[in-house]
Image 1 (cartoon, rainbow, N blue to C red):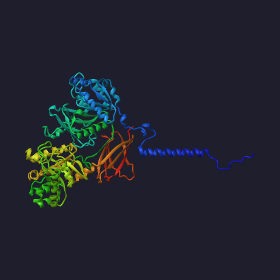
Image 2 (image 1 turned 120 degrees about the vertical axis):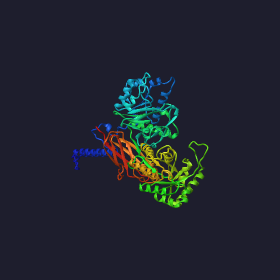
Image 3 (image 1 turned 180 degrees about the vertical axis):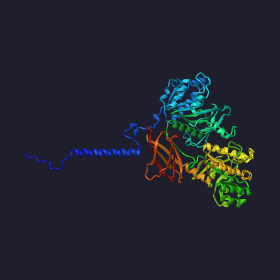
Image 4 (image 1 turned 90 degrees about the vertical axis):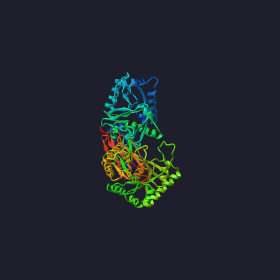
Length: 631
């Protein structure tokens, strides 16, 4: 039988193999391109932990944390005391809420060096440690470990002998100042802004701390240590303000060798007060733990651009005369847009002066909404809601009718106000409520009432009633010195300075030059001098910024930010404590066409600062931060 050969095209084995290899290479390159698009830089020469399957940013379950139960300290205390046990139980509750696992170890474990396997070592109230424990604790931090310590760490030996504060000085870079006596019952600890561990906590927030454990005041000695708070109280303490701030630290954090520490001069159980106190204290502890575990921490800065603090000038016009004209001319010559507060009756009786104020600044109304001697006054009462609204609305209408412009702020005639005041002011169209009393922060508080956003501004500094009338400081140089003390305190906190001169006191000819000196001092300290309306616009918009940091690989971090407000945002700055030693930082965006920020990475602090050139209402952005890790 004759066989018929196939006349079709012959299959070339080499061509088939070559095509397969080409397809494989294209697929591999596409996969690498996708990986780099999602995870950033990596090299095949690296091990698998450098690929997206692993990360230097651990999950909660990956961290190894130990809590020291100090039996030596328990033996130091009166028989039957549960102080050590209570502190450890509280720490367990905090870590459980953060979904972090932990191991409780004892003095014998620390003596034998069993703590070296942990990433974070919590040392609550361990006043009594033996010499080997002290050495092992130092070595642990020096070699790169993280320690969270409270109270007088290692101030006693294991045999109950006083050791002193050498450990504080050497490891924490602190000098002991004093213990706060129990007789005070409670003491306010004021938190500073602008630090990773106080991120998303109102600047100047006053934590209420019980004194039953005799909290400790210290002074920072070395630049490697940062002071986060102060105990100083101008009304109770006799020291000068600058000295008092520096010598009364209650919380500090920093580095020792290759490691890190956070120290608090009190126990977690000592914080008392309102629910808000506990919320912000929990955030403080959580931030501290994140910082010690090298987790990224993001924060929106309080003030625009490079400003670290701010100021507003709010003259109170008590009578109309030529002195008021001199005050207005001075502020105009200094380029300051002040908010002038006037009583409606005074405005009506002097319309020409009122119009002049409106032409040279903003207008605020002084309104009698009732009298309270203090926030604890149970005898006197503020007006009811309807009465307050009628008074507040009437004041705005009268002053606006004369001045020809909106009244932006209200000042209660006797200083104090309540939630009804805020609701009434918002409904009447005001933007700001200026208090004459100390509130719970040194920055504005944004409050939403219906569709309106209004800010309340606390009293953050002494005014001329206190400086001239109460303290009797008639010499201009002493007045300037006193105001500068409060300015320094505001800068130290990172808050808002409210300068409130009265026309019949600081605004008189013999005292007027002091106002000029104060403005010069504000500018010399590079504070943002703004107006009430501008402050309202900035603060209400700033509070609509939402931000999240997500590690995507060992060489990439994604920063998601959005503007949840109804208005476009102006330029603002954010800081991201990356917690890593990195180099060659490059920022790109996930979406093509997204405006890229200006940025600066500080290799010493490991903080990335980004300047965002505004965001539209409802806009969201994802920035990709790529970097190299030092070999």
